[in-house]
Length: 431
Ligand SMILES: O=C(O)C1=C[C@@H](OP(=O)(O)O)[C@@H](O)[C@H](O)C1
Ligand SMILES: C=C(OP(=O)(O)O)C(=O)O
Image (cartoon, rainbow, N blue to C red; front, side, top):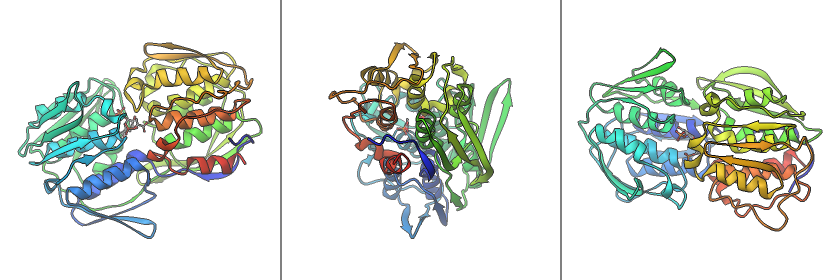
């Protein structure tokens, strides 16, 4: 386990959400879409393989991905199950795409994905005319048949989920009429930005703090040149690692700072973290900057549950930062963390306690009593259970930087789903 301060400059891989979408939308455009900076993690490769099975040509030439799409409405019947691995985003967004096509597909996933709720997409997509045979409890493996023509709907999101929002919008792409999603709490808006960029007619209206998104069906998408910015959710591990490791002064380059994703940075600054944005610019329709992060004495805070959607994948590593702060950090409104790759509230409470932190688990959040910068004891010879969850593995690797005897992790292989070179970058930065 590397122990030194984090210094120098590094670049994290491309944004996972934007990478999935650039492959899906490219596969629906007629002509050649080119993508640079694509995240080549297992989750995005599962999306690519599924789109190939439905007729798209996808290949990497030099540093660039080239996608020849089939046109909206042109997806072919896949001849074998779509293997989604660990990826919720692939599964739920592809369910939306297939819902608008007259084809049948079976989805399978690993042990983690097979426990995650799909009812949240089955419900609106059924209203649009798709039919489903899912495992008990609405989980994978499931087989669905899309509907073409389908029925446009107006759907108010019962959970703050960009995956559910995107599934309905993607089903709406090939459905005559206007499909409307009402979002009471804003979630990441990459689908909206990118669908517009690919030429779909899509409107977003804000009424009384709610977002109303309308997509005009039977759209034509035109091929694009996409440059994928660095993933803020991956950058988060290095930001926290530098903040909690004495002597650190690290530059994380090219980080996407879409306001629907950047909640963690605000929370860490409120805790006293020194994070400077340099060379703010726009890449692929998204705000981006280089972040200079310096070791800081952090103070615990009450995290406003309203920021949760803009940092939903960053809570595990925020909990690590809180364990090193002075004072108490409270979090709430985080029920969604229980249905990610693992139950992230329970997994992180157990993992941090095993490493020597003082943590209380509540129904919808954790309370963490920070050590004031005192190192954690470490896990001894009992490894942390990561439950096939990349973010638990990476968060606890960061916690290892602040642990006297380091932290043992049972399985680092899930890290390859979203951040294949994480360990190499950490070794380099903390050498
Ligand atoms: O739309 C997306 O790309 C994602 C949405 C979020 O999931 P939910 O929509 O389930 O909150 C997030 O946790 C996931 O990593 C990626
Ligand atoms: C929740 C995540 O991804 P997914 O839902 O795509 O599995 C994540 O990457 O933290």
